[in-house]
Image 1 (cartoon, rainbow over the protein chains, first blue to last red):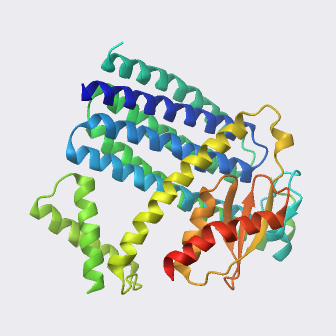
Image 2: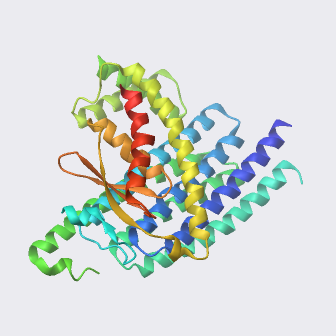
Length: 111
Length: 106
Length: 159
């Protein structure tokens, strides 16, 4: 019984994870410039991979395996904002311009 | 539909969705237009790869794939950090050579 | 002493990842942790280590909650048909009230996880945090939002 329910929950997690990954990829293609694309990749994309890890943890039924899946999930969540921040900072300092939709730019003003 | 049948079906559908996501991301890598755009798309590709591996791990019930996924996540993070440093360094060098480089950004 | 406590925690995390809590593996993990701490060199530990660990736990929960919320918001935005009209991106300078490096790091990461905002850089004098936002209809409203939300929470946790 519990195996059945876990399998259903894991299936839903898998589908949601794949859907989030797909939406992140659509965002990367549709959004106009680097900085807006970063929002899509760093939040939605991480969520997609993270949900897949959670699905793995749900069907594992084995202590160390569940622990490892959760540790992987936590690593993913902790590294995502850091790498997004580093890339945004590097692009900004290197002077990559944002799209012409951007009117407000305090960073360029202060440099 | 029993639980395990549903799980198998969900895994197949997820693989399909991830493949579409994969090709969309590759489109962005080919299209660019700038280096940070490509780095970002590569980062995205890594997280799609992690999702792929997790789905395959569930489908085949082979738990060693989990370690591969964790390792790939950490390597992908390090790669993005290294690329960010490279972008910073490269553009600093270029601006030393040519002060007008900032204007012809491509 | 504190370094030893940190190494112990890292060794336990190592055992969790490798899925093996046997004594040789724990010792091996401890050795790797000490090596990593030696590589970092700076004194990362602080006196109230265990109190901080509990606070970190509660902040981690907040982290995950905010991430799932913001992921769904951005996902909805990406899928909306009139994307260009809804976007009004901008980089704003957020005046920081928090002072220490740890607090700024935490705030920057939390901002990255909120819907539609992403931290870009901290100014040299640590007084301003540059934040990229997907839509800035009102700059002051956004600044107030962050100051009253996350920054207030972080100050509350650390004081």
